[in-house]
Image (cartoon, rainbow, N blue to C red; front, side, top):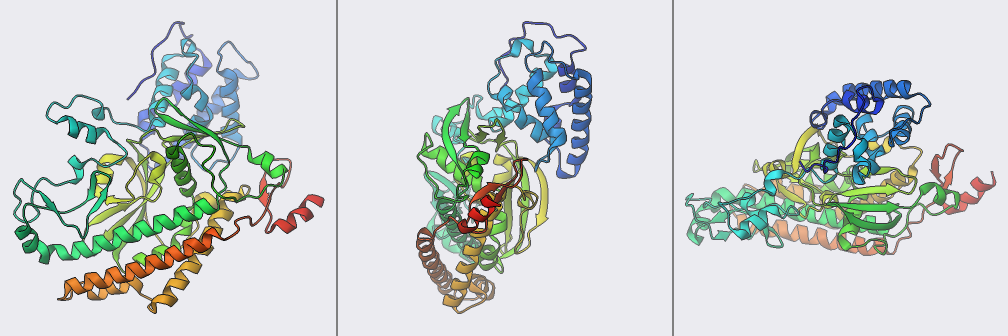
Length: 506
């Protein structure tokens, strides 16, 4: 864990309320490994500690330089409604202390340890073994291991032949291979063409399943990003790099609501310092929405191709300069601190894959990988696992009735996807689509012809999606205008721009 530099110069009184509060929170490392079922108990602990802290300090400003900020954050955690746990809301409230630790001489041991671990989380929970010496590896292998944007070839590329298990593999199957830049994400390795040919009766089921999954995931992600580029609620001001983090400063939504701005607009990368920052923000905007808008498309592509599809919520590790978003009112959100949701897909071949449509917000490049590689390299804790239904609204959008831009954007995207799937079904003339072909013909004798059939269907679907993306670019995303519903700064959205004038006059 990367610790803050130690500058303890002043002794901390034993009855200091700030130190007692941080001591009452307990060990951050243990809190960071809580499962979802234990979060309510954690919330109770945090609220009790914060209530005791406010009762002790009262209206005093005290000598501690962080006291005013801590009182403000504690009041906000106890009185406002949050989509996250009390711990996450508190940590994001004191983000300025974590990012710019300028008052360390006044910190006690408990506060110092708490904020040091929070900084480790904000930086992406990068494992220490990635930085240490590796005498058994070459310089190229060490560089590959430490490039955490990608899964390392040391993990994904087998050194043994799939057929004869000889410790020498020089060929990979081109049909089911997923290579991103110089990194082999998914592949089956062989020592010779003879071994590859002899292994084909066993490998053919996995090959067709992998091929279908890789191509469908690529098409689905392409369409999701195209929708977000066309109609987003993101309002960036500027971005910067800071201490192995990417900071994004956003405009005030309340001011935009007072001015009656459109709640959706085209994504613009002008305000971002780098293209990387823009892509991270784009993926982060998709994160709370993709579960609710992928229903029709996921049902079409995966319904009969997979044994099981699960939504898995995790805490991540080994993120490369993860995003921290700041609004000008002072509120902050950390992508590394908040839970991350992926699909765990089990194919008919028995292989289990992780499908991560929004991993780009952590700098990760692969949308699809073997589940065991994903868990080993990128999962700190698994919080929750659930069987995914065909279509549902994500819980994070349900409660946010006051902040409708995100929910309305998800609804807009979902309707476009529904039109897309209806058009694809009509053009294909089948209700089963790719799923029916894979399910009905996978075990047939003429495997080469069946592979071609799957590819033909995928090509036709990809052509239809490309045509829909071109049509999306011509759509007007400005469906309605934002306004403040009451003095409590609850943001609402009109159904159409025309009705905004009626609301404003009323």
